Structures are given as structure tokens and as C-alpha cells.
Length: 424
Image (cartoon, rainbow, N blue to C red; front, side):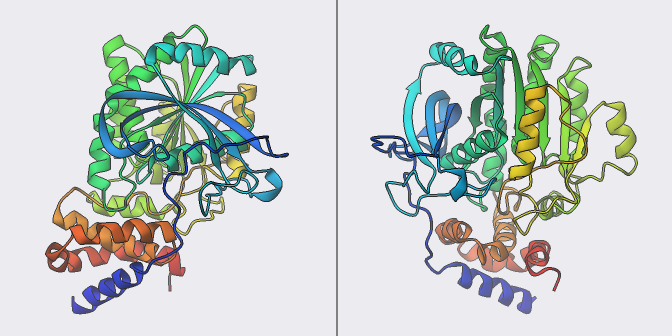
């Protein structure tokens, strides 16, 4: 017990030193005089249940708002020759440089009554009038979700009108319980957005891409829609469940409640997803939908019976140590974009899931869960500057409770530690 607590204490100490983190306020639009050759632009509509922030460069905080708010955002992406597909290049200082960084060009509020006017302009570029809705996962600040979605849209090359739905995540590995409840808080908001898009005459079809904890929000919203309307809106044709941090039994119930006329479901899984392995430990050995082996029973027959397509990414190489970051890779989103454009089935066993970092680390908002979250987060904090930054911000909230519970949380640290050290 003493050695476990000592290891955790050492990890915490190493996590504290200041580092070159990202600047705050990266979404303040730059005063761009002329477009730099080779840069690209992604125009997106953002719908959020977050509370507005006082900082114009932050836009929205991790707290919960009173209603769904809409924003018209334009993001500039540096030339392809200066960035690796699948990557987001954050500004090191403000204002960002469009030649090397992701930067905001426009951020204007939109009234819900004007959303149809936005879709009318956005879908003209695509003959299919296709809208792609992205729902992010755990531990995402507002700017994280915005820049990641811009990267996905750009690297996919898909002719879609991009719509981001972002829910109140505090962007901290210690806020798993708060984030989880925020998805429940946001169910009506996402359902309303999807219903509005489905009823919009400018929109021909809707694809929903959800990642990690965002899958729980997506399944719950679609389930609600099916219960209210006796079916999911027909325009919602594809739902892609990337690395879903969802209990398998709850997923089964959601599939059932959506009915036979539900959208075409595609599941992106990876057997080596260490973040979901940790989540399974935290949830009491509950099987997570994103970590199943689709080739073994009972899952193989069940997925076939439910007509759920599968993209098994276990053999896909990942840039992050926890193998939870595969869906945003350049090759994956490029193939996804081509299939969306061609109207082909998305599932063919070749592509993947993702986002970054620890993403599924802790349990409920209690002292025990906080201790577990710290134990899980600590090894990742050693190699990731942003984790160290948010990690240090929350240590003061743990106090004496950590000393009482560090031993119980230390065992959970072994899974991500093995991922980082290669099992040594």
C-alpha cells in the first residue's frame, strides 16, 4: 500500500511542473488581410448546451447553459505541406499564424430561427445536401471540439455541411462524473437539433458521427426521438459510433427502442483501446461497446442480427499510447469522406476511431472516484503537456481525500502505464 501511494505521489509531483501549454482564447478571430496560399477554410455551424464565456476567444465554458446556442464559425487550416493529416496544429502564442496554425476567421452568433438560412448556404456546395453532425467525447473543451471537427472535415474531403454539437465538458480528466451527467443534460438539445435538421427542406440527409462518451448522448437522443415520434427521422440515415464508451446492455436497449426503421449503424471498435479498458474497470467490469471483439460470440451473431456494420481498427496503428485516437487519423477520415460522398456503406473492416489522451478515466463525482481519476491520469500527464496543465489545476480540489483514497486508485493506474511503457 505504501509503495503504491509513493508511486502515485511521485507521479503527481512530476505532473505539476509548468510546461508550454496552449494559450487561452484561440477562437478570437484573427484580423486576416489576405488568404495565405495553400490554407483551407472550414465553415461550420456549432450548436451547444454550454454556458457562454466572458472571454470572446473562449466563447463557451464547460458549465451548463440555459438553452441551446448556435454559432457560425469559420476555421482556417494551414497548408497541407506543413501539417500531417489527422493532426491539429495549435497556436503557440496569440494571435495564431494561419501559415502554421489552426485559427478562427469568424465567430458570429446565430438565432435558431436563422439556422435554415445557414444550411441553405452550406449545402449548395454538395449535390446531396448532406449534413454531418459531430458529437465529441469526454474531456473536451469547446475549442478542442471545434478544431478537431475542422480537422476531420478537411481531411475527409467530404462535401458536407459540418454541424458540431458540443455539450458541457470541463476538459479535465478529473471531471468524468460531471461530463457523464452533462451528456444526460444535453439529450433534449441534441434531439432538437437533429429534428430541426431533419425537418429542414434544405437538408437531404444527415450523418451523425459520435466519439467516446458522445455516443451515450447520441444513442439517448435518438432513442428519445424514436419514442416521441415512433421512429427516428428518415433523413438521419447513418450513425457512426466511434469508440463508444457505452455499457453494452444499455446500447442493446437503445438499439431496440430505436425500432426497425432506425438509421444504418456503424460501430468502430479497437480491442487494444486502453482508455476503454480503464473505463471498464471503473464501471465494475461492465463491457464497453467500443471494446468488444466483433469476431467472437455472442457479439458476432448479435451485430449481424441487428444489422450493425463494424469497422475493426485493432490492427490500425495509433499515434497515442492508449490507442483511443484512431478515428481522426488522416487515412481513416479520408476513407470515411469518400464513402460518404459515394453513398457506399461505411463499414468494410478497414477503418477507425479516435481522439486523444485519456478520455475515459474516472468514475462518479466522489472522493473515491477523484482518487481513481488522479491515479489513471497521472501516467498520461507525464507525457502530455495539456494533461499536466489541466491536471495541476484540479489537485487543490482533492485535498485530504486523495491521501485517504490513493491506495484504492493506484491499481487503476497500471492499464495506462502499461500502454505508455509498452508493458515494462
